[in-house]
Amino acid sequence: MITMPNNKKHILFSLIMTLPFFPDVFYLALAVVGTSIIDFDHNLKINNLFVMTLLGILLTLILYIFNLPVIWGLLILFLALLFFICKDRGFMHSLFGVILTGLILTALIVGLYFLLLDFTTNKMVVMVLILAFLGFLSLNLKLVAPYIILVVVGLLLLPNLNFNVYSIFGAIILGFFSHLILDMFTPNGVQLFGPLYKRKFHKTTGLIFLVLWVALAIFYLIFR
Image (tube, rainbow, N blue to C red; front, top):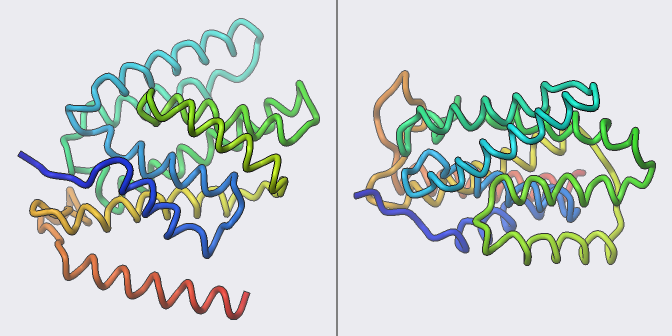
């Protein structure tokens, strides 16, 4: 049986890793989405996959009815299919998997952002709607309500409405990597280069990544 850190540890660690680079509430929330969604290849997350599939179908139908691009709903369905066919701690826990998933989520977020701007020019409303949708998409249902409340309060108190594609991808990837690093400290480790290379990486690699993160964070904070 594969052991893994609990959800709260993953979320907290994703915030710690992302904060030095992307201190805005919007990007911190995206890191939480990233670290949460990566475990959907686990058989215990099958209910989350059903929710993701349902949301993908509903979004596709809504976009189709209003004669809008259905690609954003289809991307969610494609992502659900990827998680469904991949085994636990397999491709979706590899560098190739997280980059692919990060690109899909970034494309989805950017697409929804400009789609929603056609209906309202209030960027804060658009960001809240996107983050709420991603919360339903990626979090356990018991965490969705507090997540949305914290997002709304955070955006109201710190209304930085900067929207940058590279920052979106970076925050999501940091959320992914924070998850992989914690998983390296479990007995089963992580196949970082799967499926091309089957070797599992453990604590030593996790410590190396932590040292690199500290060095990058210090360099970024000093020279940004």
